[in-house]
Length: 376
Image 1 (cartoon, one colour):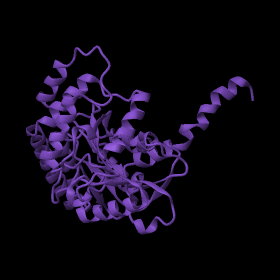
Image 2 (cartoon, rainbow, N blue to C red; image 1 turned 90 degrees about the vertical axis):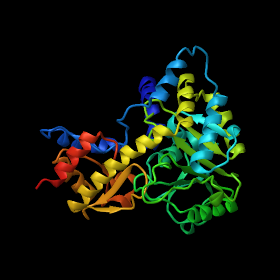
Image 3 (cartoon, one colour; image 1 turned 120 degrees about the vertical axis):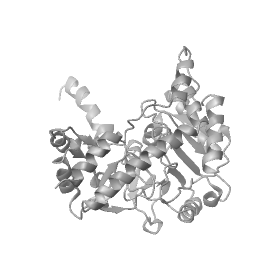
Image 4 (cartoon, one colour; image 1 turned 90 degrees about the horizontal axis):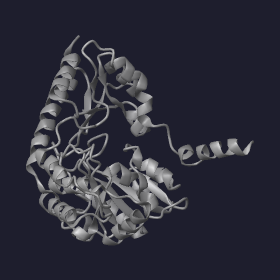
């Protein structure tokens, strides 16, 4: 092999070789079919917000637009204090502003967290059987072993370094009771493992109210070994801003901060100002939750009437539904009606007979989906 060929091919043997196929690429044929519908596609596949960014957030961003200097990696005092206030008001969690770090959305943090914590090939990361694919990606980026299980009894002798919790779940909308989370926390603490809870849908409870891993009923009043990952993408329509926070054990936060300083993972100053405004205002969250509630009610009724069975879905931004057939058959059935959804299989093998419907479409597009589901 020539030197030039070696220099080109070497990167393909690196990080990319450890990662799976990007899941949304698998949906391309169904997306093309759905777009041929005479009234256009109803895209309920990816949970990307479609409603306006709240005025209070846009105003804060504009005021901070003249921001020529580097932003603080640790976060501005205003942002950290606003986030701490939100934890107290909304989740009944007492966390110090010093134990909160801004992140470039939650996906960035999830993707790099095992690496930032110094984990590697000798460590095992435990992820749920049905899970956001990025938990697996983050473990692979760090070169960790991945164990997919919902049962601590199935872990065996593995050297577990990190356990992911996700409540409300993406994709299922399942809410983990505080008692269950507390058992996982106790199990992890006995083994010196870190528990990280992805709670980006925590304010979207429908038939059950989610509880944070940092709540006293779960953690026993101590945040040792625990991290909570929060996002402003869904509750404040800030997916385009890339704004979130990680909070919890001050010692772990300090480790993450030290690594982030070195690699330049910093949230832009204007975005930090916008995030502070978002955390400080509860009224826009109530408005957005009401929008999602109305869309959920309409879509749930149409799905049930057309023969779908809804599983879990007690909270979060999705409906987890099945026609008791392969998820890909359901994806095609819906695509022929111009409706695009996520196949359950991309979240884990046990999702192979379910699909995920996102509530992130305009009222008009949700109404279009309802009409198509009701048609012969």
